[in-house]
Length: 223
Picture 1 (cartoon, rainbow, N blue to C red):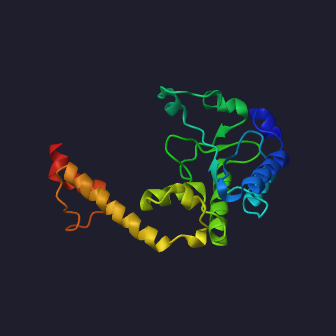
Picture 2 (picture 1 turned 45 degrees about the horizontal axis):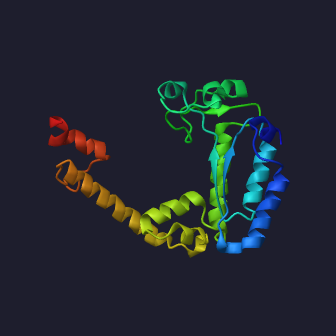
Picture 3 (picture 1 turned 30 degrees about the vertical axis):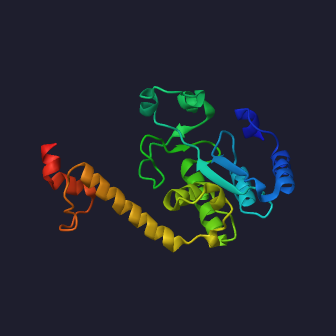
């Protein structure tokens, strides 16, 4: 509740959940309810984070799909180079109780952002918690496909997104998706090579990365 009051959003957790249940009971599967959750907001305790995680994975959750994201704080250099909208939080995150740990070795670190912590939790913890939520949801199989995965499936299969939202994890042909990912990757590579006038020589040599190939090619040297 402290977080809700601090950021000026929403109402009580119980009232929001009751509203979602009312909508689900009234309209059933004729509409899809989805939610996005940011973990690590100001004054959000570890207990509150765990409570949200447990609710998302429980039968008490009426949402059809949902996504979780760690709070992202952009590096000041990125902020200063931005021409678009910059929120007060972007500019003054230190005033909200966050500090930059300076860590860049974390597996969750993304260039242009900071690995933060505050008196309640830290970026690594919330990122790990979200990872566990997704893993558990997928293992349960009966859960609906979550939002971001549904988007990926739609882009690979051209299946209507509304149909994917109604699928459970155990109804998805994951083997087919792996094959489609490889096919799309090869199609993209061939289009890129054709556009750049690059012969497909990667089959002839052992290049660790595509950039290694470019650095060894006539195209790169003459660019």
